[in-house]
Amino acid sequence: MTTTDPGFREAQYDSVSVLMSGQGGAYPYGNTVIARGSAGTLVIDPSLEVDHDPVDADAVMISHAHEDHIAGLKHFTAPTYVHDADLAGVRSLRVLIDGFGIPPEIRSFAEKHIADQFDLPDGRPDAIGVPSEHVFDLGDISATVIHLPGHTAGHCGVLIEPIGFCYVADIDLTSFGPMYGDVGSNLDDYLASIERVREIDARWYGTFHQKGVIEGADDFRTRLDAFRGVIERRDARLLEFLGEPHSIVEIADHRLVYRPHVEMPFVGAVELRTAQLHLDRLVRHGAVLEVEPGRFSRT
Image: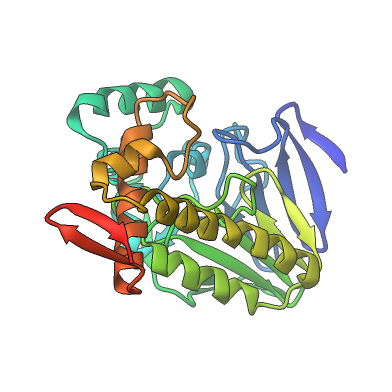
């Protein structure tokens, strides 16, 4: 690796380089991917530590509409692309924040946090929507958009071929586990997306947060199993709690995602959305019943 900026280190994987976060990649930081082809250069998810366009990019791909993935976008003038389902959130910061599904009383906190931490513009109104399987032709390499919804409705990865680099964005393999607490989140979609990336045989797998780059499909799939296991543990925790009837608010207060000592304004909204998604899924599978209006118990 060679130092290219005080904020990150550049690691090379054939014609793909990753600007590895100098802060370890935990939120609000992340790892930015650059694919250099003979006919063009694509930047994916310019992070908070990217304070200029280091490659004179021909195109920028945003994996999904979250503030940490567009943090460095203001430094790029190249055409910006995002999946159609998350396009409105990249075009408008207001729409991006709407997607959190937070109550009005804490919206001002979210707006202040984003302003203080990221100093984002009001949006990228000229962003271009693309469908799944959209291909960036970079000459001797190509970058194909892979729709991986669940985290957000438009969350995507990018497969760079023929070198075999698969960027999986926020399927980030952390011990914290999957996040699906937004309005556009979907637990069943997230599980399906995990299975989709499991089927991709690549040489390298890149994540936006923390883990960075994993080499080899076997190691990646082992880590992916552990990541998916967090969802299963949340299911088990919920079923244990529903040994007696409880409401959705009581389930959220019990917490499936955050530990009891974590106190941040958005925690309640995330817990409520997560609890609802798990509850809906377990009801569909017959593991939970609504025993009286608004109160649920395991079968």
